[in-house]
Length: 309
Picture (cartoon, one colour):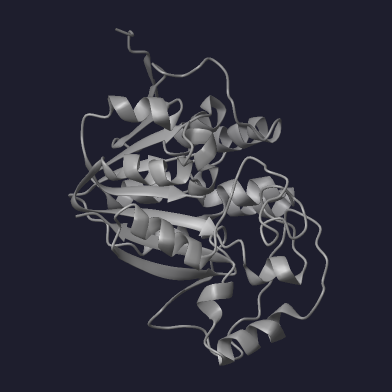
């Protein structure tokens, strides 16, 4: 039996029992900068730091706009949450204010330290370091909500399987309470921005997802039809799609099948982290898509809520 290795940053518990000893996923030296920032600046001053830094990584990891993707969810103070791939804590603090308990899982110690320092006053957060496939076997409770925000696309890195994405969902489902929900935020590989000239978010290659990821890579995203089929095969018959705009990373609006964008509603383009081409007017193309009621197929990102039995 492995001896538990637990430490605390403020009130946040960090469990390193299954940590492999080095971070297997990192953005490099920018993570040191992020750690320095959260140690020295309160949440109320992060927007000023972001503005002054002019750095995509700092914007992405620390922006308060990130939380828009989950802030509206009906999570209550009686609910328990499992956050898979919690990273630098962009969602963790918000989940903490909404839920009774938040258990985080992440591969990276450096990112988890950023998370812990950022949320060190929260008494209901614990962070487990290690690969999900190893850590999930140690989970002793079930959860009302399980989140995979920008995580599901990395399924083949988490799950050693011939069908990693199917098995990822099946494993996660085992940890749901009756009526519990899984929240997935992921890019649409047929998103309008990729046709218009943005590079694929993970590989940095033009048209990579559109062309079926011929070069392999560490991540894989899906179209709406592909996700629908995947969810059906894995037994999630109750699901609701939402459409964050411009995308799930920095969402300004979240549309639903009950309220889709109309002509003239879509007029924001975001591509802060990479150079991109401009092959056509993306906003005019979205107007055409909206007029033909096809926005769900070309939304840049999806937010999906899956409900267990």
